[in-house]
Image 1 (cartoon, helix red, strand yellow):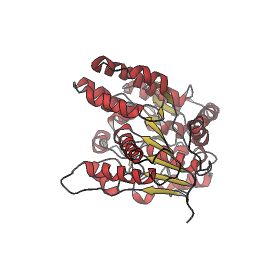
Image 2 (tube, helix red, strand yellow):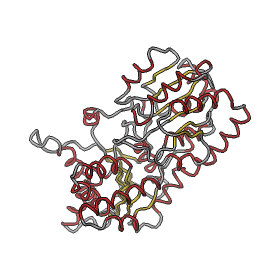
Image 3 (cartoon, helix red, strand yellow):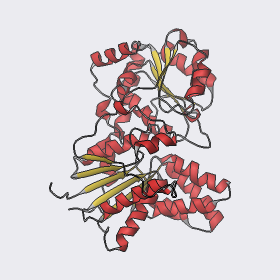
Image 4 (cartoon, one colour):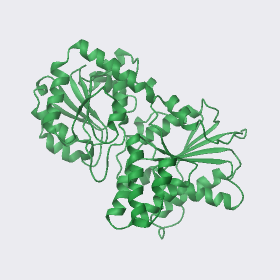
Length: 422
């Protein structure tokens, strides 16, 4: 096999994790193959580690294959039982060290600052200590939970050192990006709190260096779908076109599933459409209980990547009523954009976090945590809009969503970097 001339490495919680950033990694990897990278690798966690963590996972047999030229690596842990948690991160670090020291010009993107950016920085430090790794360019992408779950929590608990360390790690990269303008503002605001607690100057540097890179989406997977394929997928599920409101995401309270179930049961639209809750997550059992055995509410836990756009296309409306919680704030809304691309019914969502950036002025938006307003939005979408209204809305939504096409996002992310070339 010939030696690669240019490599892209993405460090992320990849498939089968149900997470928008696993999709980001896939889309960046696919575009990289068309942009001169002849060695593309996603470095992630072993499947047993993901299962043991309790993360919501897709069925393993439902994951679409990656294109030839993309290698998914899941380094095994290093060490024995006396290193209970660090074994897996050491496995990641050691593999990255190997990739950074073999002389291939490399761009490395990490998503989630802890632990992924930590292992990248550590591996690169080790590589450069032996005189290698100077042909590696690093990009760190901060997501909302990096800030809400680590920085803010650490400050609130009087553990500002953890927050300061995370920001130090972030800023140690060649490029620092945020998933949305909302997230960028959140980073700067949180850095100001760290500065006040630690006497540091993170906020000034974050304001100067952090840019925005929206999630890259495979727009082609959601447009111009075969109508027969859509009808067949719905028939397999016992559904009909425009006969259901669709929720498709992680089943957590932060996604507003409890509000959606309550709103649906209180809506007049329930007489016309069903509610389909597609996904899995920590609150799935609780949501089933909340549904109270209502046979109009359908739970699907095995939706494949291939089936997802078909369900979106056939829906009467797509609802993602996210609401801010201490552990999570919706910093963009990838599923919303995917639904907008699909040409299905209108998107119903909230004004939480970065959602307004993902939908523009094309969605039915309500305040977060308001089931009554959500019920009214369902009724508007399924009872009041004419076919002409729905068609016009779908075209506007798709036109807006095309700005997040993965090729466009990839090129903007890579342009302007001092990228190593073979």
